Length: 172
Length: 361
Image (cartoon, rainbow over all chains, first blue to last red; front, side, top):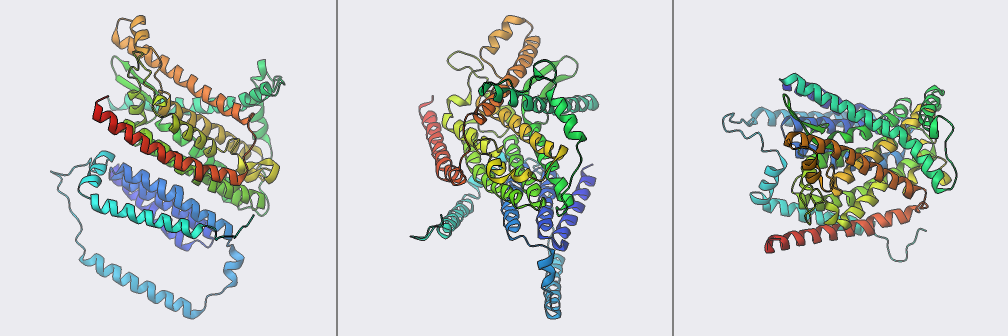
């Protein structure tokens, strides 16, 4: 049951991820990306990491992708403007070479990677639940957690500064 | 032993699904009757007694209208929009605890709830944040400037108010220490001033409740925050190009959202399925603790639905009383009013929790 669910979710994830790349219409790409996030959340649930699954949906599918869709709808990139700018041969060659290099690097890394193993005797299946995750974050990983929050605060202040109106600039 | 439990669970899920749709159907009738009452006119009263057949007549009308898709619309997404709106609206009622347990002799306790997950609050929050996709996709796919404007308004409005909504939920979470809606409801069964079943969160979180209520209006796109469809400026907003049952699904999804939001508010702040003097009433009605428990559970479910109806009435009352906000007023209220208030609420709650632990209240 879990095995077939895993294969179904994996198929869905890969299908949606390929859809993001191959869609001509950017709105379709965004919708495929949302589907990718959903199937990734399904994987998290299979790993009994419910908190990560829910937060993944809230943050990525619920907030960030809405903003993505928002911007893309405003730009209204459609087929006509996309096809108008033909890509030159040089661009295609450069794209193929850089993509191929990335593939080589990934194969090289994965070849020597140590796949993490787990001990079925001592494995704690409850490790992904909210209580355990919170406990770990506030004890063992307190410093990285607090540093990340400072980073977020800096980013927020920066975003507010960028979005702030200049003095004596009024639009309405 | 495994199969009957699953069968009962399926029955409960089906019942929740059916009841939600039934209430949503009669919300369309209640909305017009209440509007009529508030404006001193009868409202729909011709189809059946008190106009009770009106929703059926409307449904027949919507189903038999011509399915129309505008020439330059994106066909697939045009259909996907209302379907998604309805899907996300119906998904969220899965984790709402509609009642306590029914203890049957040979099967054991049955929870009157779709599914019990220990991240119920996050689930609701996640599904609510997905609700905007139906509106956005439908508005964009219509290929109409008014629809697109409505969709864009819906997106920025929902994102803005989600933050304050989440922050007001965090205060409840700090008090209860659990994300499970069922456990939050059970915690409110404790006695307060000697009255059992009255330990409601509203007495501890009045500010949080007001923030949540305001955000709920914005998230369900109800007046005074119904700017995505404001008919005076945008014709019909995101559903300008929609007709027949596709329009019906959009309007229906709004009512389902109201029901779910009312249920969540009742659970989080108004005691869920608990009601005053529940232990005393149970002890009075039966000496057998099992039967008393079952009677209280059934009464509690009835009370829970009464609370939902009260909130639905409140939503309609506000709709026909307050005028619509201007868009900049809406965003200013969200970002400059509700978010700072919600943060203050979190700090206050944290302070009170520390104090109560220190003095052992």
